[in-house]
Amino acid sequence: MSFFYYDTQSKLQRVEQLVAKDKDGTKQTEKVSECSPGPVADEEILARSLEYPNKFTDEGGLSDILFQDAFTHGASAQRLPGGWDIHSSDVHSRFEFRAKSRREGTDGRAPDPENLYIGAFHMSAAELRACKLDSDKASRVRIYDAGEAADQLHAEIVVDATGLSRPQRKEMRVRLMVLAQRRGLFVSPHLPAEDFGRAERSQCEMHLPPVHESIRYSGQSSAT
Amino acid sequence: MIGNSALSSSPAFSNIMGMTGGQLTATQSTVYVVSEYFVSTKKPAAKSDVDYLKSPLEQIRAQLNAWLSRFGSQTRVETEDATLLVAPPKQIPQEYFDSYEPVFKTVTLYRARVSKWNDDASEVPSDEQKNAALLGLANLVLALLPAPSPMLLEDGTIGAFWRRGQCYASIDFEVDGEHSWAGTDGTKFHSGTWKVPGQIPPDLISELLSINH
Image (cartoon, rainbow over all chains, first blue to last red; front, side, top):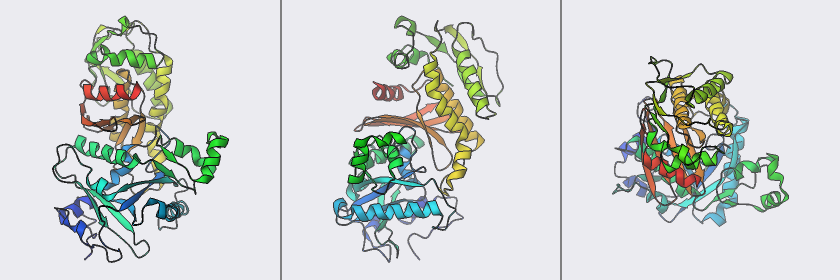
């Protein structure tokens, strides 16, 4: 049975069930997905997408909802074994494809016309695994290889929130958000010009593809 | 839900009123409003001792209720167990209220908005979650804190956050009134609970000051 199998009838969240199956996190060092190239090494870079409106809205910028799914369902990330520069184009295309599928409802769910892929953050697996509270002795963030046939470099980020109070869980969300934005938001080259303002309103340091550099300096961003 | 005597006499109060274009002077910022807070109409309302001729509380309440009515909400805010010692002699500037209006509107309309997202992961906020947020926000207004931005968690909990540069602070409005908050300047992190009724935690105020300076 797959490590990622979980009981949909359980009162426990999917992440809680995964943590219960791997209490000390050692499964991170094993290949748990048949389709993946292997476990996620500390030195690997992972990309996390920023999507409008379910991960971010225009109101006030990036918030700590960015990683809330790491406490519930598991947070998706894309492994970049060759680093950001080598994989950035593929990653943007993959995230945009996913957003387009959401917009058009071709992913098996009802169409979500507003769904928009804004850009990506990236960080190393080691940085994620080192993210913990001051009082923690052990790591709380786990990263599993979760490759699928259509996406072999898919990874899942899971937070072991066992024993944490609500404020501590919230602090972990904030810490993860701060980590994610550290290198800035790498704006999608697929982001329509009229939506460029949404990327600006993330209030993150922005890294722009050439297509958006010209938009920024021509002042078109005010159109949104 | 707010005992804001400490806040009102703290530098935070002067700072925020200055930010919002307030007309209060430094000496007028030594304001004490004790045990004054907003509660849901579902709770029994006690007699209020507020002198509404002098207090801005009626102004706040009237403004919030006008918004809630306009946005289609059945929720109304009331005051309870109020003892007014000294009231600010001038009204809160309209600009301050204006900064909160879009926040209340978003929270009130989250239900309709989320249902359009078609996002399986997001729960539509329940009435209890919505009211917890509205009352939490009302108490932020009462504390004269700058308007936050709203956010919605997957389980329907509504939160609010402030950010500027590397500084960030955020609150989750929990239905039991024990609101979790966390803040950072980008390097140091703090977190805790704002239990209402009760004074806003000084650490949270410090975080907000660092954001708004």
